[in-house]
Figure (cartoon, rainbow, N blue to C red):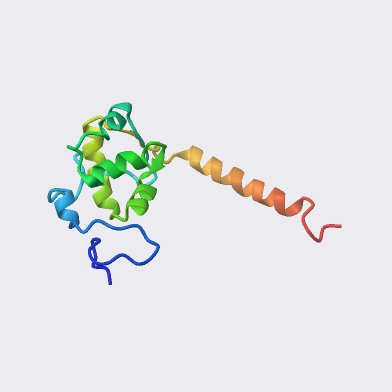
Length: 137
């Protein structure tokens, strides 16, 4: 049985999870230095970060974040892949971003254009439903 926070034995077929307590990973911090990043924030490792992967000074979790972010990945997906709590990943990402090891692309604030996009999606779904679907004569 796994303990909350990642301790205990891993189930067969799953990735091992860090046995280090979350507050140790974040040095007791519960929020990053900046405002909290939305979970859909896209992250990409910088070239400087990729160059540092071979250096031993990077902690295991930070190294795993950089390796995972070789390609763009959302904050939520990163947390899921690493098996870490979303807020822990937020703090670690904030640290890496401050050190210029990650590029952070925060989605723009919700506005009226989001409603327009939603309306276009609904109209598109209605068009699919009414045009030549099964049962239409």
